[in-house]
Amino acid sequence: GIDFLGIGYDLLNGNPHGDVDTPIDPGFRAPVVSLTYCEGDDTQCATRDLRDLQPIEGWDLPEFACTQAES
Image (cartoon, rainbow, N blue to C red; front, side, top):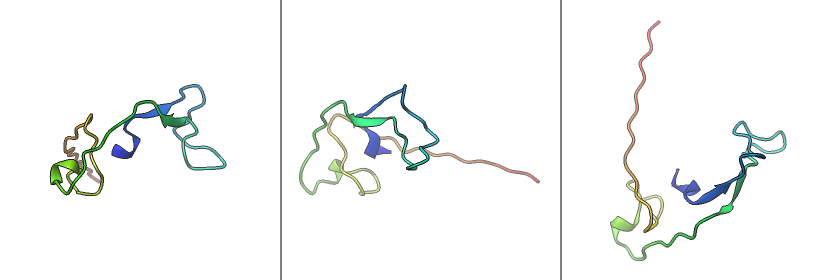
C-alpha cells in the first residue's frame, strides 16, 4: 500500500515470508526518498478512501481484481 511508498529494501537480508521473531519482513529499511504532502482539507490531498494523505510526488490508481473457482 501507500504506507510503503519511498521505503528502502535490503535484498540480501530481506525475507518476504517474515522472520521467526517478527512477522515483518526484515528487509524493510528507512525511507530512501523524502516525500512531501499537500496540506489542507482538500480531498485531492487524500487517497480515494480518504484514509491516508497522498504524497505530491506520487499518484494512485484503483486496482480491481476478481477470481473464479469451480468445484
